[in-house]
Image (cartoon, rainbow, N blue to C red; front, side, top):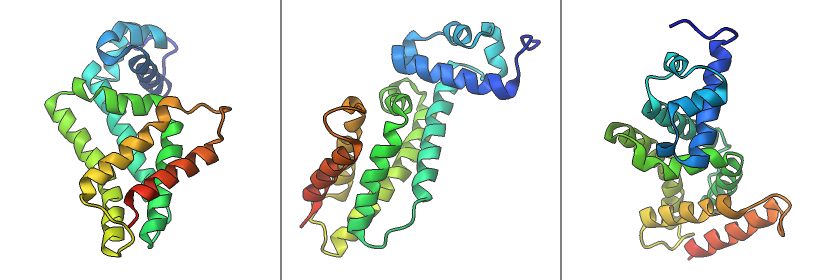
Length: 195
C-alpha cells in the first residue's frame, strides 16, 4: 500500500505511538479502534499497518518501551553503596520519572489485562527487573541491620504501590511542592522499613 502523501515514516511512526498512548490512556485500550488512531494522526486506517501489525502489537510496544526506558534511566543513576541512600534515591527517581509520564504509567498498570499471554509474560519480566532493583536495596539494608522487613518481596510491591499513588493525585501548583511531596513519601517509606 502506498504511503499517504506527505507522510514520513520517521514522523508518522512516532505520531501513531503518541496518538495511541493518549487515546488508550483516555478511553481505554478496548474502546479505541485503529480507525480512531489513524484519524488522530491524520492518515487512513490502512496506513497504520505499515507501522504496526495490529492494535495488540501497538499496546505491547508502548508498554515495552516504557519499561525498557524506565530500567535504562534507573540503571544510569550513580550507584549508592549505602542501602538507606539507595532507597532514598529510588523513591526520588520513581516519583519524578513517573510524574513526567502519566499516560505511560496508567497504561502500564491498567492495560495489562489486555495483553496476550505471551506479551504479558514479557512485560512481567521487565517489571520484575525493576522490582528486583528495589528488592535488592531492601535485602542489602536488611542484611546490614538498617531495615527491619518480614518479607522483602511484599515490601517491594508495597513501596512501589505507595509511590505510584502520587501519580493519581499530584498536581503542580497544589498545596505542596514536588520536593515537599517527595519528602513526605520518603519519610513514609523510610519509617515502613526502618528497624
